[in-house]
Image 1: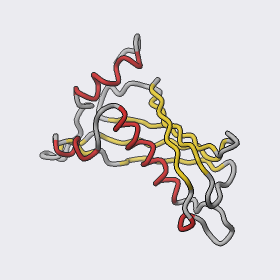
Image 2 (image 1 turned 60 degrees about the vertical axis):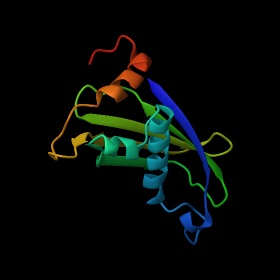
Image 3 (image 1 turned 180 degrees about the horizontal axis):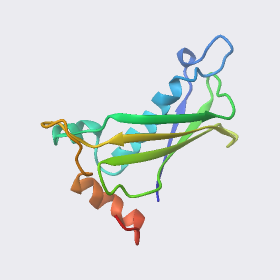
Length: 140
């Protein structure tokens, strides 16, 4: 399994009149977690696009356990539980508050798409090479 941790502080504009993070903002929090996860592996979405790979979100689910509030420092835990062996990659997310209380869980599926053809493609070799050590013994 591959894990990455990102922290960010909830901004006022992300909350509603009840001082609670608006549920739609969790999609952005999940994206921050994914982008930083990939960056830690030595790539950025921009670099992947320059290499001809797009990664659109095709499914997203979230479960809201507790609210986050303005100025909370939240931790976004992003995990890859399985090494992608085909055209899709699934990120699992957990969001915690400063007291390590679980706020939200999520699951986001993306496809690897060839920029030129618009067709699905397998995970790029350079990404597979970076992720493989975290999944020793797991079959593709």
